[in-house]
Image (cartoon, rainbow, N blue to C red; front, side, top):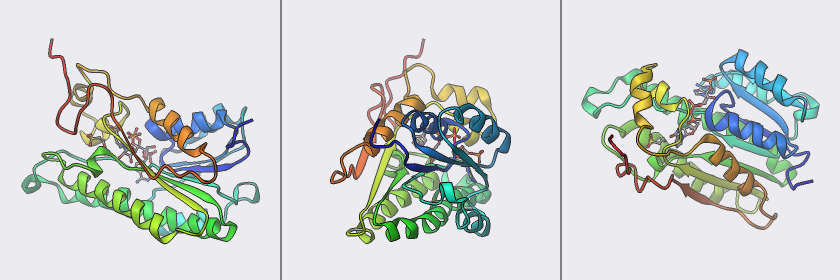
Length: 256
Ligand code: NDP
Ligand code: 8X3
């Protein structure tokens, strides 16, 4: 029996990568799960996998769709209605271009998903936490929210916004009993680069070649640790990179 047993956790972006690994890890901790994402078939398959362990509710929505976010999260089935844990994870980079070459559609996607989507979901969930004087919001930021790298411009800006919102929420929610934390990973091998490079698998694979990147399970393990601290302890801000990464631009890659 762990501290997380019987808690209700909502994970945005549970269909792949860090969100998927976190869903599996929290199921093993005994959390009731609300799993969200746009790819409904993946949600169905994940629910089938995890329902043997814990109750699972899947919600299929785009975090950019403000009305749908509020409609679905404002009308949760009773068994899932008291959300103890919110993992604000859904997000991606779209493109890697110098600012003068950037595609405004990519800019919109990153700001609308990584920043505004996170705000909509938070707005739908936090009032219930305030009413119950307890809860834990974990933001998945990035080293890109600490340090800007060439051609990272708008993605880095969106993750700097997540960093600012993590601080802002912790200030505004101080005294409410709600913990607010951010975990900022460096390079993690997920579908992230597939999305960034719009399905160019060869280019995406190149990102993780020549060194040992983080795995999504590494981040999930840290999330479990952060969530499992005693009630008076809040890990406010945590940055994690693989051994071979020293900064956004310094990675010990073997070229042979
Ligand atoms: P993945 O591409 O593997 O997963 C992204 C998840 O976000 C998917 O489940 C996807 O679900 C969901 N998502 C994306 N857009 C939307 C949307 N519009 N509405 C709802 N859900 C959406 O990447 P990661 O697991 O790597 O990324 C997870 C988080 O981690 C992101 O916030 C990313 O910025 C951050 N991060 C990643 C790092 C890395 O190197 N991989 C490093 C640092 C931070 P679906 O497509 O089904 O909607
Ligand atoms: C993902 C890590 O360095 O690709 O946030 O931006 S990086």
